[in-house]
Image (cartoon, rainbow, N blue to C red; front, side, top):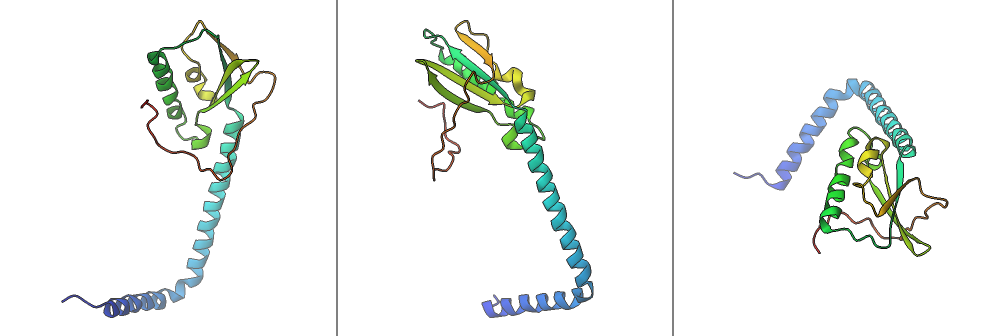
Length: 164
């Protein structure tokens, strides 16, 4: 026979009240344990944030300036993309945002400047295979790159970038 909703609710309330009565002598101990647990979680979160900020300060920025005649094949672009795909693996126990790769594009003096930024430990992976027509510079040149933010637009997740 299937119990009704009232019977199930009555049974659950009975178990709850029995648990409250049984644990009443331990209420101060349980409250203290909950406070210690909350403080430990808060301390761990603060430590993780400080660690992420410290890791973000150590990031490497490379400026890739292609020549006007630079025309890479799909294979070369795919190889560089696979190389950059290995960068988060160098992060291991680092906070996720500190192990990510960031790209920035900027046009200055009618030339495209491509910036790649990533964790210091992955600096060798951030450098593309040697191209004769691409100049690789450390840093971001003489002027800082201004970020663009779109108010109210959530970040894009997923998607298949390989499909044209």
